Image (cartoon, rainbow, N blue to C red):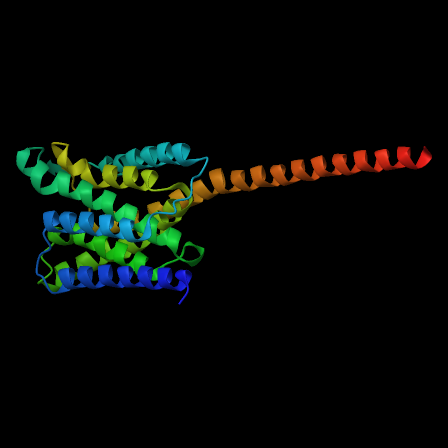
Amino acid sequence: MTHLKKDKILVFFLEILLLVVLFFALFVSSKLNRLALAIFLTIYTIITYLFLKNKQKFSLYTKQVTLVMLVFGVIYLIFYYLNFGYYKNPRPLSINSLKNYIIPLTIIVIASENLRNIFLNRSKKGKSFLAYLAMVFIDIAIYSNIYNIDKLDDFLTLLGFVVFASISCNLLYNYISLRYGTKPVIIYRLITLLYMYFVPILPDIYIFFQSFLRMLYPYIIYLFLDYSFEKKRYVVAKEKVNYVSIKQSIKEMQLFTELIIMVKK
C-alpha cells in the first residue's frame, strides 16, 4: 500500500471518528457540556495535527480578509441591535460566565477551525463532506444548550435556528478557511458568538429573524469576498502569465537576432 493511500485512509478514519463521537454526544447525551467538548476538541486537534501535520496554503490576502471579517462581524451585531426591544442579559460578564462560556467557547472555535483547515487541505480539491458534517455538529453543540429540545416546538426552533443556519455558515467557513486560512473565520465566529457575554443588554429579536439573518448573511459575505479577492487574484495571475510570456518572447527574439548575426558572419 502506497504512502498516499495510507494517508487518505488515516484522514478518513480521523473524520469518521470525530463524526461518531460528536453524533453520540449530541443525540445520546441530553446535554453536551461545553467544557467537555472544549477539552475533547483540543486533544483531538493535537492528535490530528501530530498524525497529519497541516499543509496550510498561504494567501496574500489573509490579513485583508481577516480585517474584512472583523468588519462584517461588527456589522452583524449592528443588525442585531437595530430594533426597539431589549432585555437584561441573564449571563453578564463574570467569573462564572468566563469559566462556563467564554473560555470553553473560544477553545471550541479555535480547535474546530484548525481541524477544519487540516481536513480541507488534506482532502481532494478541498472538499470533505465528513469534515463539513462534523463542523455542523460542533456548531449545533455550541447552541444546543440554549433550548430544551425535549418539547416539539423547541426542537423545531432548534432545527430552524441552528441546523439550517449552521449549514449556511459552515459553507462560508469552508470557503474562507481553504483560501485564506483559519484566522478570518476564528475572528468572525468569536465576535458573533461571544458578544452576548460582554454587553449588559441583549436584543429581543424574533427567533425566525435570527435564523434568516444567519442563513442569508454568509451568502452576502461570500459574494463580497468573491468579488473583492477571487477576481483580483485571477487578474494578478493573468498579469503574471502575460509578463512571463512577454519576457519569453523578448528572449526568443534576442536569440533569433544573434542567430542572424552569426549566419551573416
